[in-house]
Image 1 (tube, one colour):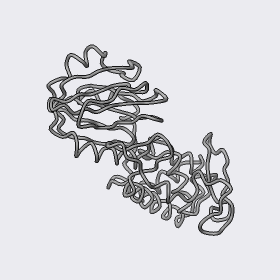
Image 2 (image 1 turned 135 degrees about the vertical axis):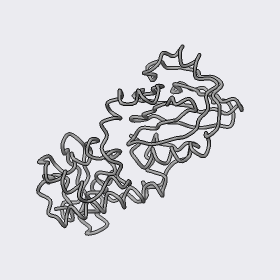
Image 3 (image 1 turned 60 degrees about the horizontal axis):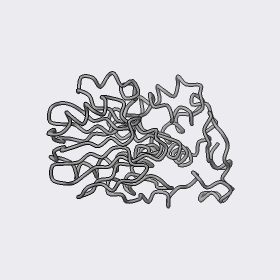
Length: 274
């Protein structure tokens, strides 16, 4: 599933490619992806509107249009948004094609069919509960150590489960939670509340540093993720634990283990992370 670094990479690419472009037509190939409005209404009313801004909130992409309406897109597990200077090529996993007045296009495809799109007025955003209930952005000023310290103190769940909780912190998923905990030398099975102050400080620093490095490397690509131009990321070359079961830890040499923690497959070093 695309996480914060991947979605932010897509946002930055789309910002360079879409600002000022005017929608000319929409083709809805799979109706299940479009949650609001109906395909007919989207096809009738979207043309003529211009893209004025592109925002990311957690794992959501928000395409702001000139009339204060917003296209909200969640890629879920395997969704892709790829821009082309010409008409999009049709294939069996293509769900929507946004065509622009200059002949360019934006294709939304999704092998697993979990990705979702809404088009709504700005004042209707609070109706999307998954979006409106998100916690602070990890790389924003809203996420600071006193916030983390206060929230961790209240939680008895595992620190891995806490990192995945979108109401605590927006945008983290399985890959980066594992990488963050390895960098901070914290076992994913620990109760969040059990962390000492020094460990909480290490966790705070690791959240920022791992995400910043992943964004700089344009995200992690194993199979499905591609940026707005269709290119893969490269952070998979820097992964320390995720997907590295039975390989040596780069820090101590112990073999990386994989266990299910809070219902999620979790990779960690049994020696370094305590």
